[in-house]
Amino acid sequence: MDNLALLSLLFLIAVLVLGFWKKVNMGFLAMGMALIIARIGGIPDKTVISNFSTSLFISLVGPAFLFSMAVNNKTMDLLAKKMMKLTGRQLWCIPLIIALLTFILSAAGCGNIPTFAILLPLGIALAAELGIDVIAMGLIITLACNMGCMSPISNGGIIAAGLMGETEFAGQYSWELFGECFIVWIIITLGIYFLYKLYKPEAKNLELLSDIPGFDRNQKMTLAAMGAVVLVVFVFNVNIGLAAPLAGMILCILGVAKDKDAIKIMPWGTFILVCGVNMLMAVVKALGGIDLLVAGLTSVMSGVTARPIMALASGIMSWFSSTTGVVMPALIPTVPGILQQFPGAGYGPLVSSITMTSFLAAFSPASTGGAGVMAQYAIFSQGKGEQDTNKLFVRLFITSVVCVLISVGFSLIGIYNIL
Image (cartoon, rainbow, N blue to C red; front, side, top):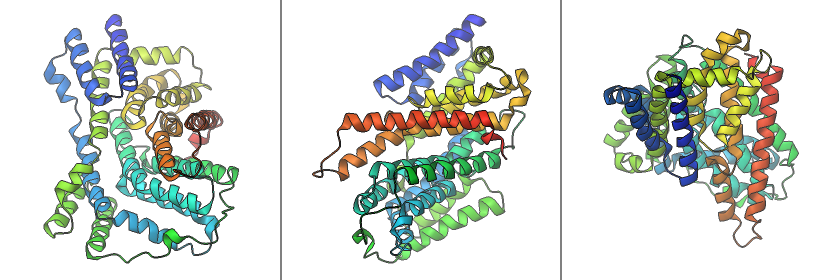
């Protein structure tokens, strides 16, 4: 059994290495690896398939369907520009306003990836026009997308709740986790804001926001549908995975949006990544891989170092893989076992240490956040003395390392145990 447990962990490592090296979808790769290791371990195919979380899949797909419609008909883009225009001539506060807007949209159910796609180009363009550090603006937007998505109705929060739901802590800590994400978001955002002097724009006005049209009929109805979904989820405790597609189909029937166009831009690869890795993790757990991993981690831990060690492990993993798709499914299931050895570490603080550190590592150019910042910078800096790509790569990776170390420090001094 110990050999099977070790082999299952090696299969998990193989998924991480091959996925990063060959740039293939780790979800499909994890499904294939789950089949192989399950056959070796005597687990039937039917059992492997049953570990595909349909509830998680629906909870992720539903909101993405509705918000993809809002992206297609430019509702989200126009909403962002209108909120930016409210700043008037107070240009110093634009980076803070765009950070707040990004956080709110991500937390409201749009999720980190769609919000990132909407607001990063706008943020980079605004930073270039303001004459402030465009990379710092990209960092602020990336951070807000990732921390905001830990809301109980957004993709990160839904994934965390699903993972916690498999333990005795089901139904707990979702709001505490989001609250701590909010605190860390404020601290790191203000740090970037003042460190890179984003409060000192060179521009006196913004032509980009000078002529913004009003919302048309379709956009107003889209906003109303989004607001209605958030309302029924919070007030009537309706599952967002069911409420959001219902609202989306009503928009389609009324001629406001087209379902086919929304489906085309939905992040299907991310859905497969999350659910596929969950399938593999279920097999790894069944073969004793999680217990073996817990034993390895606890052997180098103490009651004081449990949180920072888990934080550091999650940060290192996140430099080369997805937080929601790989790091959270791999490490959150180990928390109950760690608590058996070190009950004082606390379930919530350990989950917070894992989640937030891995998100702070997302500034790495090898991750979606850092790579997106590099790509947008390249687009907006054409013909304007483009910064050397290698230097930009190093800058982003160093930023990621520093933020991971800061998060490890937060976990050590108890920031992730405030709520």
